[in-house]
Image (cartoon, rainbow, N blue to C red; front, side, top):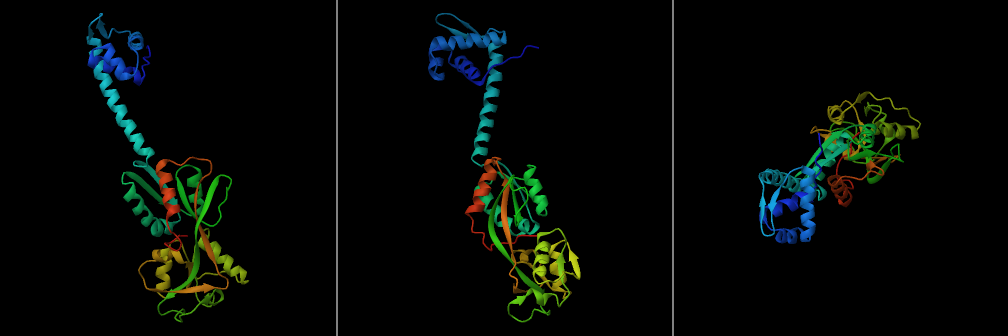
Length: 307
């Protein structure tokens, strides 16, 4: 089957000539000389193997074959114009999609405010969000399943990832209202081991930093309860079943149960919350717009940053 290879400019020039029925007027409109337009039409006819115009020294009349091509040209040119307009919107971040991966309480506590601000500026951009532990966030970014990721602390594969610290997240002590943190003062990590301890599951950034804090004191962490979700930790603490140490920015995700929050020192333990994206990979316009929004926002202590 013979392949027909006509470009958009040839279709545009043909369409203009079919409408104005004058080589001189059509040539002026498309920016060609009369002879150049004539050669273009001959070239199109040769590509198609069809006679498109009956012409003499004074008149140009479209043939039935030309009328059929004109209908097709109108459809193709309108579709191309619409698609290019959509592409222009995409380049201007007025359309498209951005996918974000983050630690659970970042997606629950920090991102909603940022997404609200973003969609108010880019209402036709689709935003997809999924949560994962730090390794899952990094994998999603490296594999291209997420444009941007929010992690805690340094990340592996630093040669393939761009990491930018956004803010520091200090640990605080939490307990139930009638629990052992009733005194309004700064508490020390060593004091927490005197009570049943509620810990996040192994493999989370919170657990790693909790173990590191106790290790500085020469104490092995032996939790009374291990949980996978912050809301569960909050519920256990509120019920008076133990105390915990959690990053301050996770507090909004602990649930509505009443708890007491106290400053925690000796050692002062903080978690670095950062933004990652694949190094050397150009961000899409919507992803770039979200990236720039994050960097322009005042995020210090503005929201949670999950396990």
